[in-house]
Length: 68
Image (tube, rainbow, N blue to C red; front, side):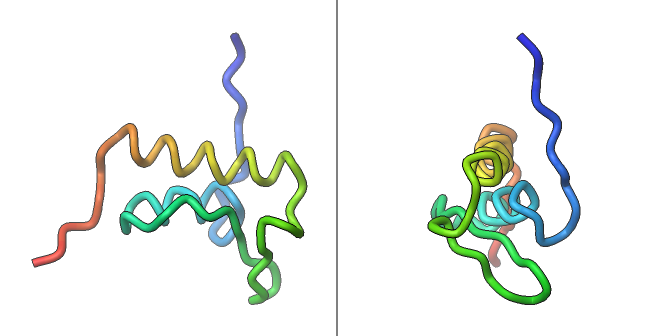
């Protein structure tokens, strides 16, 4: 089985998914393009897949922001 590689550039779907996992936010696919938030309904299936992959990986690693 081949593991997909995703664009991890700041603001792209994978990055946003991993950030949401880091901050323990919900899994709500989105990303930013030219400072505009792009919602799941406007994303391609590949973009949603990248977001979810980033989110899932972040949750699996268990690395989260600690609030004190």
